[in-house]
Image (tube, rainbow, N blue to C red; front, side, top):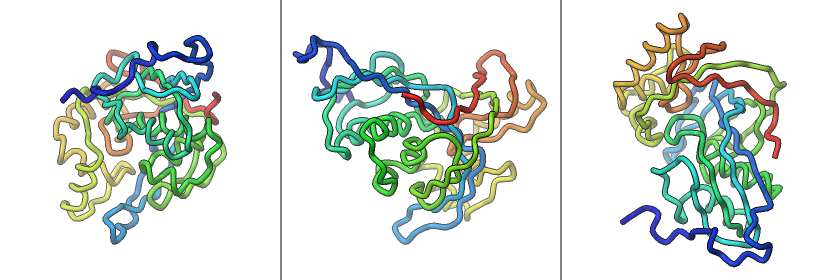
Length: 258
């Protein structure tokens, strides 16, 4: 079955406002600068201690409140738009309805919180502040709702804001997905290894997706710096401005500004 079957083409809906989408939200990417796994709960969920920051790489959501249907108008061809999409789940959580046109710029399964950032934008728009419920949608959703720079603990629901620090990073985003669940499962199977570059998931990601090493080494050779893995991957990053083929230079931003 086509993953988009049953989705509404929102441009055909009879909006009371004449077909316009009056609410425009920015959904910034998140970057995990460091990640330690501190334990595993009895239900199998992993406890973390991570430093996360918000980047100026953003998806855009256009909303027509009161409408229905999600349409991805650019990027994200591999992303289903049904009830499991985090945008739809976030709308359900806050008890709102809206037709949504989503422009994707954050790659999926890249460790940059693409879907979580979209959900966080919806929760922010709705004034939702229950971080435990937000983390129930996904481990990164709570941080993506708050944004800025923060220490993130628990299963992602404990957010301690930290002072903003301007930072420039260069991303290399390989065209290979890293499924988060598989990476965590591999971490368990490997006996819970630590990450020498500050990310405990790096050994597991390399085990599941060995070709990641080639992209890490390419970025290291181009920049002279030791790349770090973003979250569960597949993005590698180094600090500093190192433009070049296949690389994206981003800067941290303080708080999402919708």
